[in-house]
Image 1 (cartoon, rainbow, N blue to C red):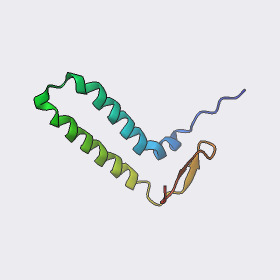
Image 2: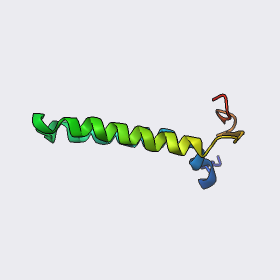
Image 3: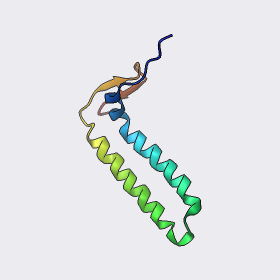
Image 4: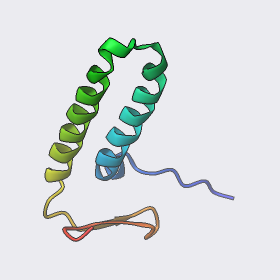
Length: 78
């Protein structure tokens, strides 16, 4: 049985989702250790992460590719 690993260029197509996942996990991990006075920092961190994800998504505009054996499509509609 041959194991097929994703190509590194294919991961750039997943960058917005990777950014949001890592950021969400980071906020969940850091949240219990932040005092109530500094909770607004987590909101700003989330907003900054969303902006980074949007910027990485804009870099994919005009791209039309299918990766992971057709399970994931990147185009202007998706």
